[in-house]
Every structure is written in C-alpha cells, then in structure tokens.
Amino acid sequence: MPALPAGRLAELDAFLIELNAASAQVILPLFRADHGLEDKGGVRGFDPVTAADKGAEAALRELIAARYPEHGVIGEEYGEDRPDAEFVWVLDPVDGTRAFIAGLPLWTTLIGLRHQGRPVLGSIGQPYLDEVYIGHAGGSRLVARGQATPLKVRPCPKLTDAVIATTDPEACFDGAELGAWTQVRAAARLARLGCDAYAYAMVAMGKMDMVIEAGLKSWDIESAIPLIEGAGGLVTNWRGQPVGQNGGQIAIAGDRACLEEALVALKRSAK
Image (cartoon, rainbow, N blue to C red; front, side, top):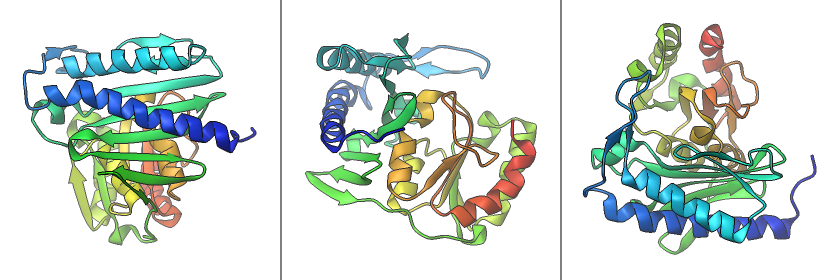
C-alpha cells in the first residue's frame, strides 16, 4: 500500500493537534469536578461514562465533519459512521474513565486515523499534563508546553530487565490470560498497574518496555500503533502477529527480543 504523500500527512498531523486541543476544552473543566457519571453496565459490571466522554466525542465528530465531510468516524460513545471510507478516525475521548473519576491524571484522549483500513496516524493526549504524544511513519514526538521532542523506544533485549504494565489483571484477563500475565510479570524487573493507555506513551518515550492487555476495542489501541511504530517499537497480538481492526489481546514493546521472550508465555493463552 503506498504511503501518504508527505504534504497530506503533515496536513492531517496538524489537524490531529487541533482535535486534541478541542477535546481538551471539553474535558478539562470536568476533571476533578462534576463530571456527570453514568454506568453503562455490561458483562464486566461497572462500566463508567461521563459527560466528558460524550461531550468530547461529539465535539471531535463535529470538527471532523466540518473539515473532512468525506471521512468516516468510529467512536466508543456514538458508534460508526462510514467505517469503510478511505479515511476513518477512531476515537476514545477519555480512555481510562476510572482514573478520570478518581481524579488521577492517567486518563488519555486517543485519536487514530486509518487510511484504506490501516492505522497511519495516531495520538495519545493527556491535556491536564499538557502532553500530546503523536506518531506516524515519519517518526513520533511529544508536544508539551510549546515544545516538540522526538520519541524513541529504548533497547531492552531481556525480559528480566523490563519495566512492564497492564491496566487491571483481575478485571481484564480471564483465567488463562491471567496465568500468562503472571508468568511474564514474574520474569520482569518491575510491573505497574492502572496506567491505561498512558503506559503506551511511556513505551514510546523509552520509560517503559512493554504493555500487555486483553479485551481491547479498536478505539483502545489504534491510535497507539503509529505512535509506537514511529518511535521504533512494535504492536502485535499475543501470537506475535499484526493487530487487526478489532483490538483483542495486545502486546506493545520497545524491543523485539524482549517481546519474543514474553510471547513464549502469551502464545499459550492466545485467542
């Protein structure tokens, strides 16, 4: 598949920064304030959604429709609109809603762009910290406090030296998956929990080495793929294969050798 022309990619990259700013305007006044909490329920029990989730996604959809009316949109709160379009934006305005309602600045805004079905541009934004991690085939960078800094994963060929993360092992993994995670965690140097997609950004930044998740939706992961790959890392499923459009079991790593060690355990529970 041919790459996007540099000029078009730069145009879409600039628009992605605009989208992050627009979502922040909706979300930040509700953080650590009255955020209109609701429970969507579902198979995992408590499934929170706030006015920030809904309001930010509505604002993003409005901006996309005004600027690129031919583009499609897939979002967590309002579903699909032309998901087979040449360009499709994939939105999760508040990933980590549990962190958001707990007042913890580990929630993020995830915005990805597919071109002809393939993720080509993505960002992980944390507006309370004034951070936007953004990436594509041309590279990844952190935009923070008016400065842009290139992002690069760090070498970590041994799992025993790795800093790894997952969101919530007991809530997100079934029995076999939890066993695989426990095995990987036992081998790693350090594990952190509850960081949601902010941990993905830390892999791109070279501060963490691996994130292991399961049960993800497309809007949970697609924005991270161009970011991690642009920083020199990898995103695969638990079989070590490319991630499809439906999320599922995900492994994010900065070093292929470290990933291969973890996949020895993960493949046993791959779906």
